[in-house]
Image (tube, rainbow over all chains, first blue to last red; front, side, top):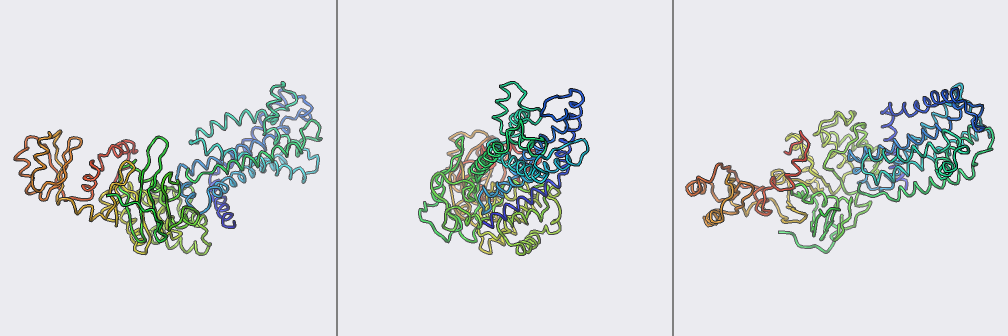
Length: 263
Length: 333
């Protein structure tokens, strides 16, 4: 058991070092959501003057912040999973799977790094959103409770995405195919998660899809933790936590259970 | 001469396959493979690309489980303990460009549970032994093909395995790098490590293997020492540019004293003879107008292959297909 933990940590350390050496990925994953908040937020706030009660004072930039935290976790986790393909193509994954540890241990180590990288970048976006003037976050249960909720939400989201990436990567043989599937599935899901617009004012059929969408529960929990001044109009932390946590556990376990020795 | 079926498991044998078979989707695979590898023995699996060598290696390494028959590593079925005994070198260099040479070895050592101090010592030793210590801090992307291959081998040796499995370790390498790799492998073999190498290079197999297992179309056709495989051959090998010899011409040739195996393939006639000095004048006397070129050399494992399989190794259909697919710049040694 200790040996397996050491092996997973070795893989985690190696992937973190690889990300640290690939600085463009590191910077762009944090800068892109900030840029989106600055440009889209300012444009919509002043150009469209949104008057939904869920967008406090018509400040769309601040409304976007929780969604951008979720988006960072989403894209960083999936991009980190691309490392799986790099290792598979280079043969390194086969060499790693020849070790005495089970394929699950190896893939767990790789998934762990995707989770940590995705989460860290999401936390960096949160930290910048806190200090950047013009972004007003509301910590209805205090900043400590709110920050803890954000951390748990982002970790659960990253776990779920990492499991999903693993499931996909074990089935889809090329990185291009992986990104195609992910873009085809995740972009629509992300747009319908409540990150860009409140779901309670969209047509009924869109609202239904929104509530089937697992990302909705992550974004709702983030709104609850660091943006909304009150729980009114939100799904609520119990349901959010149950859906997100349950799915994270199921999808991650499913991803690891499919781990083959030969790739 | 396939080796007999060994149904009993010998715990002293580093590797053992008994009537093992595996079929890939699409139909390719291997059938009824019996193989025993002893301590300190170097066994070359010789065959063209697609013959099934890598499939056998994957069964030995535990990457795939035989669908029929069995595999045993030191008498036990595959598992963590078996993998701890195995050092694996894949067909292509398998390193991460962003990692340094030392980091590559450290990662591998930790995956094999080596304690840090011991790991550090072994890294230094193995890098020195393979003459790449001066590149320890360099990223893998800066290494030449030969150095990457040495790093692959260093990684496979790092945890001191009892069984080394290598898939074409010297493919596309210059002679100097190949010699360095074989030198380090022979030292390991002398220390009792069992070595299984996939290759389609008959000269390399003849020079380095204790035993050669000839594989074609997923089956073992011969399993013997290079000396035994070549001892049955005539002394010289002739290759004649002689398109489409008739049955009568072939039977005439076969009736001559001193002529051994004869096979015609793709515009060339291959034959082994006791003495080229005696046969060549006869050939030109009887069939001079039919022969447009001739190459003479001493018989080798290549001719044994030819005699057993019926096709020259480099003219095997799968080998030619692989050569056509091989990217520019990748040459076989």
